[in-house]
Length: 55
Image (cartoon, rainbow, N blue to C red):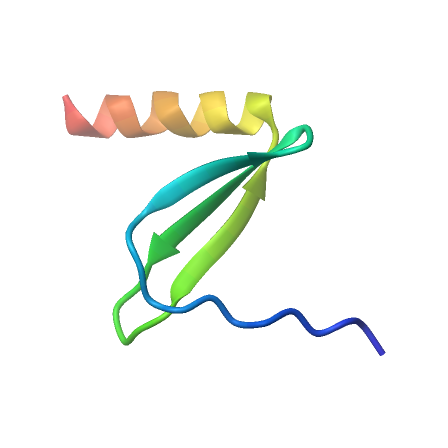
């Protein structure tokens, strides 16, 4: 059985660096946060996609 990690509570959007990974914690409707692990290339691609749709 896989190790169970504690659920993250509600909170602000944040990104932290852990080793070589970036951890994005994004609040979602209904409570809780979506947690996504990205490397630098994925974070850059995400940034470029967001810039395109917000201009």
